[in-house]
Image 1 (cartoon, rainbow, N blue to C red):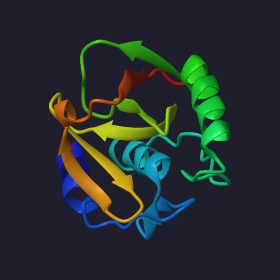
Image 2: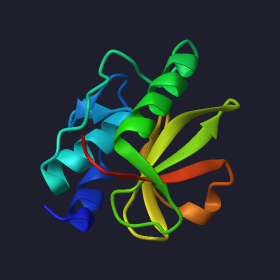
Image 3: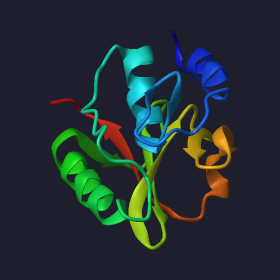
Image 4: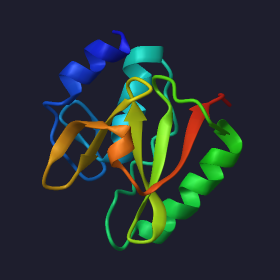
Length: 132
């Protein structure tokens, strides 16, 4: 499956806390499933946490640790890059780049949506997976 095929299929997926598959996912689950389907790479699951008020601090810490080990910050956007952005003042939310202008993201209440990256003013950084 290529990134465009993944994106078309993904927009039908509902938000599901702790979700890591096609039955539903949270923001990290979307990133996880994208890498699994498009690159055949299994990222760390982090399936015991989800985007929620009580998990925001934990998510921020885990994202920071994971970024340092497995991701590098970049200036140019390529398909499958992780787009980290702020939610409630913390870096604890991620979207998945489909092109250099469009991304997928998911939230409670909206499910998975296809959005213009420039519409997100809360972007903290763009990160590319470099492996383990």
